[in-house]
Length: 412
Image (tube, rainbow, N blue to C red; front, side, top):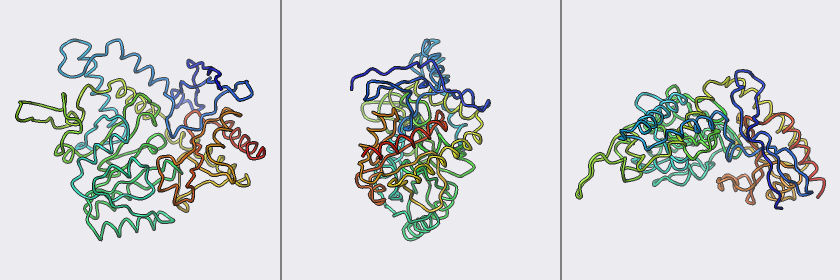
């Protein structure tokens, strides 16, 4: 199918709550071709993979580009302005996440990049659950995997037992599952880790777009986010963390910017964020991430959460009402953000996703979502279908997905 996408990117989706009216998305008005040679408005249920940009994010990047220059050490006005914006972006991200005074904000490419950076700084074993995204499961040099239990209390008990039996430097845990959306109590996890002399890292890639985070209040040592999950798809993320491990580790990228003094025999490295931001940084990405954080910080997060909860409940009820459709869960009774994965009896996940796209203009994701051990333990060795909700989702989208899924199944 080679039909050209139709888009009116200047239109935006405006949310009904006035306090959130500034959270317009640039993908409004997008039309997609269908297999019958017609087209329809696109229904996006793939926010958990990459969210469309907020209009204010695009505006912030465009406003900065005419005076863009390389940051730090430049004497020209564009360099000074860009440096100021870049460092202000760092402060904005820190404020959005409620960082403590002794924590740094290091700009990275995404959460995966941030975790790999942190992995080079950890002076010991890392304990991690088997349910994690590969980005939080794979990078650690000394990894001990704990199998998650059927409920959160039992899972915390298993982590407690592991940390009591053998000391660890770090407990790494997701804030919200990228497969089921289920939320872990990160403050409780931090207390558990600290009780055993370990620090905690939180993968907040899926949590941050849906829930407010306060790193200082919850006593989180390290946390990572991705801009492309947070309505700022410009190639930047961030690692937030305590300074001592970061300053003691070798630079993540050895080169210009990370080095304070260099001879042919030895190198003195910077401390602080510069130590791990070698090379020319992605300034537009950092500005985009900060603009998204600022927009969400000024929003009515409680109203957004209420709306998301209603939409998610409507989606889950609709899926349960269809014979042969099975929503996935890790734990009994856990709350969740707007991410729902499911299987369909007798139809491969990729086939379901392709039919929803080609026949109904609905975008979902199919596969194992970079969480193979979790999908395997849930009995989904062939993967599942994932529908994820974001700022542009409304009741009509939910009903459209449920109706389309019924028709896909009925046509088999």
